[in-house]
Length: 128
Image 1 (cartoon, rainbow, N blue to C red):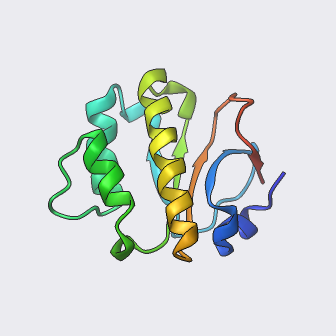
Image 2 (cartoon, one colour; image 1 turned 180 degrees about the vertical axis):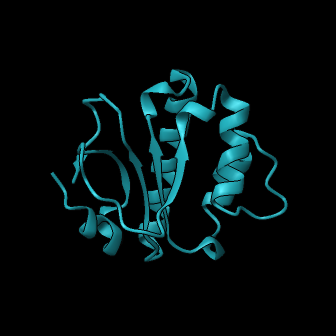
């Protein structure tokens, strides 16, 4: 398990993590509630608003990939609560895009982490 403070402080730990139940997430971490995101379009719109993506963000997967790779975005940490409620295909695409952007951000010295609470995905490292 990777301590959450380490994930937030060190770009070497950029990536996607399952959040250990009961873990306190520091204030200032952007949050989305998956219960309010019934489909891909709602997820993409919410990501744009929550992360304050640039005006040219087109609320599609290509635009998300481009915007997350933008150095001017700075460091980003997002918590999606109830992540297992998201459309499985949309979540898979989001994870692929986030991992790619997080890798690029690490090379630039920017932090980028996606924390999923309420996820049972065993393929993700645990944060706590």
